[in-house]
Image 1 (cartoon, helix red, strand yellow):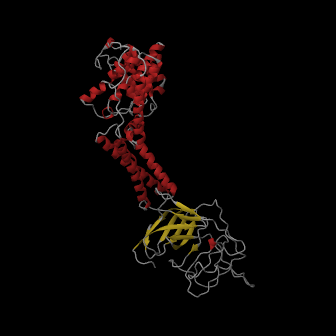
Image 2 (image 1 turned 90 degrees about the vertical axis):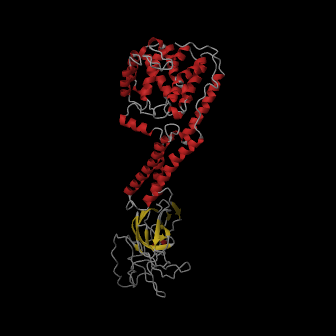
Image 3 (image 1 turned 90 degrees about the horizontal axis):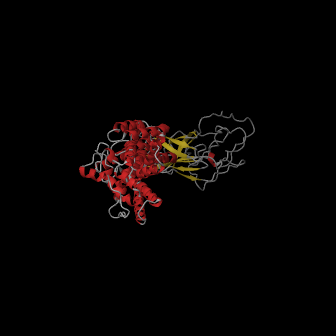
Length: 568
């Protein structure tokens, strides 16, 4: 049996020194290994997927590229976690030293020092103030260790359920709950690289851990009742005499320590440990029953299991999970895998939202929409150069109306430029039989520019559209801005002539497609697809689509000319 602590027992000072937060170098190392390198791997895979290696652009390739990017990030952080444990760095893994966790641990150590100073200012003897400070100290110290967080409060709840099941008096129930919360304060002196290592402890390390009941008892003795001190000191004693620190057996163990040992054993079984996952309530019940009669007293074991069956919520937030899920949770605990997966998914989502499945955002420059005049020439959206015309030749008359009644693009000689006179309105039809109009169709409008690869329409008079020209509808400010998502192929010869499929959105009414600054002939297949023919060029250029609403400028909508040579 232990002697009762004296009222003038020494107050906490140099004899109790909680392990401090790890050096900042561990925080920097964990940040690089857990955030920076996985994010770089994510962006690298996104860039690789953007080159078209996964096949033709579409939602399925976007999903596949996103999955591969996340898997690459997880692979990097898994290797970093393995290296962390292989080199025996502190804690269960690098996640505990990421900036937010490292700051939490540092704050907990600082708060613990404040609470110890506050305790030193209190007079010796039990009081509500000292009990409150001690409980707050236990919670703050437990917060510095991933395997101890939340355990003081859970042990207090389990103790209350056991006391209710055994019908203990209120005062004894309060003593048991206080002891359950304070019992592991002394573990704060054990360095985390010893306390949280997954393997077996060496002899000297085991002795350091087994000192924690005596350390805790000495710390709390000036401010709590002797029964609480005795329970804390002896909660690791076994009924068969095989426990520590004093090797007590049977009736030598204080009554509250017998109850506290049952509560602590059950809580330890359902908690994750560095070397194993936490047991399910059923597994913990089986294991606890196997210890009844040897290490633990039988009556308290039966009472606690009965109380837990009636209140399963006291077994922790993960009580209902399957063993497989529990094993997976234990495997990733202490690692940065959850955070890394979240960062990778965020980068992939931003890449998809930007329009290129890349980490660089797509920039769209808005242009004020032109207003079409119902009584004058067709809208600029309908005036495109169509083909090269020999110098000095008169401009051919307007082409027939496109599908939907909108006048087709007018032809302009190559000599036209910024100072050229504006195109005149089409002349009204002469009297006499009207020329036969071309039947309308739903085929896309083909627009060609000078110097493009393709066949120019043969010169000659074209039939006028029936009736007056119908102006194009004026686009509203709410119309969709053009955005380029993908292009295929990504390369072509310097001489031009490569058919390029441009996927995106907002292409209806497109007025121009340019490869760098060179205009290209194109065909609007739908609001989301344009087929363009690359003009001659050199190097790497941006592909841009212009509509009356604006011009898309996608930083990764690139086309590479191969073969070099001068521009044709």
